[in-house]
Structure formats: C-alpha cells, structure tokens
Length: 110
Image 1 (spheres, rainbow, N blue to C red):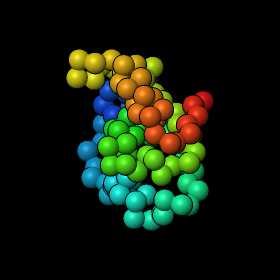
Image 2: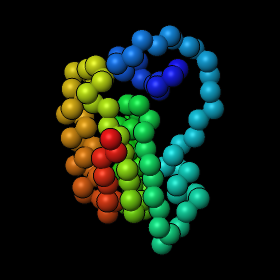
Image 3: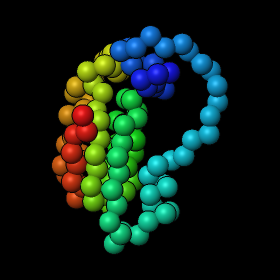
Image 4: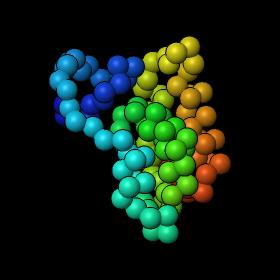
C-alpha cells in the first residue's frame, strides 16, 4: 500500500483491504536481549503504524527498554479507534510514562 499500512484493525486513517496472510514475526524485546549487551549504545527508530504500544509495553515489562539509549518513535493514537474501552490517547500516555520511568531517552518522530 503506497503511503503505509498497518496490522492494526483499529487504524482507520486509510482505506486498506484486509489480507489474511500469515507472515513470520519476531519478538523484538527478545531480539534486543539476545543480540546486544547492556553496555552497547542502542538506537531504535520505531514507526510501526499502531503496534508501537504493544511492542513498547513488552519491552518495558521484560526490562529491555532500559537497554535502549535512544528511541525515536512515531505514535499513532490520532488515527486509531477505541482500545478495550480505553482511548488510544490514554494508552499512549501510559506508554510515555513507561518510557519516562526507564533509562531510555525517547523522542517523538513526526
């Protein structure tokens, strides 16, 4: 899809066709933990069209977020519909709180 796409059904900013293909994935937190040492300087650029919330939460809960020195992330709360009765803006704030509690320096990527 020209201009981006998403695995998030809640992402409604574009007209996308539904594709039910199975694609291989990785656990990003496990990848970081198994690939890098805590004394390495790690920079992450994250623009994953709404999936950043689940990935960053998993990274925080596993302790891997503390290994990231610089994180550039594009949040997509403005283009997502409701999430289990909680607005995406509220979920984004919770994720930002997790980021601020970690040693990770993060910047909004726009």
